[in-house]
Length: 58
Image 1 (cartoon, one colour):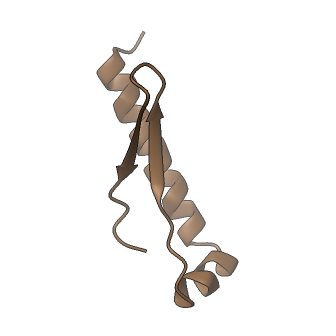
Image 2: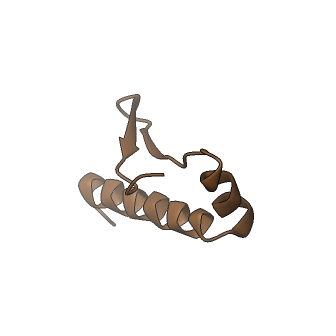
C-alpha cells in the first residue's frame, strides 16, 4: 500500500495528466484562445486543504 505522501503525489500527477488531456481538446483550445483558463486542483480530505497545481499557464 502506498504511503500518504506517495498517494498525494499520484493524485497530483493524475490531475496534471487530466489538465493536459483537457488542453488537447478542440473545444477547450478554442475557449482558451478566448481567455478561458484551465486550473488543476487537489483536495486533501484529511487536512481540508485545496491546493492549486502549477499547470504551466492557461
